[in-house]
Amino acid sequence: MVCRTGSWPAGNYCNVPDTGSLPPGIFGVYVQVTDLDRSLSFYRDVLALELDWRDGALAVMQSAVNPGNALVLRQVGEGARRDLGEPGVTRVLWRAANPGDLDRAEAYLNSLDVPCQRHREEVTDGLTLRDPDGVEFVLLCGSEEPGTEPPFWLYWYR
Image 1 (tube, rainbow, N blue to C red):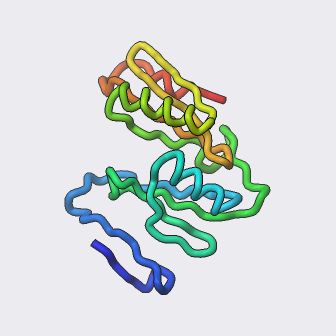
Image 2: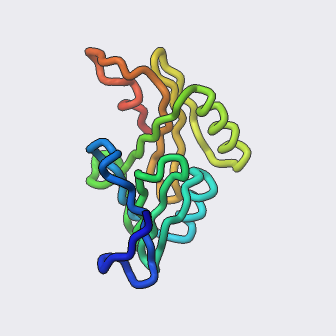
């Protein structure tokens, strides 16, 4: 469904999913970036997100595969850093369907010369990379079984 509302700048359109078919929970992430064009290139070319709309300060991107979830990019000043232990987004978790998806993602990132690191644990397989402003993305594939200990990937630090 395409909408035009007073809350969107004139001439911009947004894709609004049928919320009746989506489970409740987080449906988007708002990330502050220092260079909107550079970040749009990264999220489009590296993470294969599609641009929904943009203006001079904001951009909304979605996955073609799962368009109900959005990534909002907002350009801020050069001095904006986000480190572990400080408020703000430092890590975004992305679920992979199977280990083969991680293998393909790792090969793709390597073909683009995007630095990434593979993490293989007993029940979890993951791949980490960073956006141009240092926000960490973790692609995960693993067991959803509840355990007595937190999952290993919570402790994957820089």
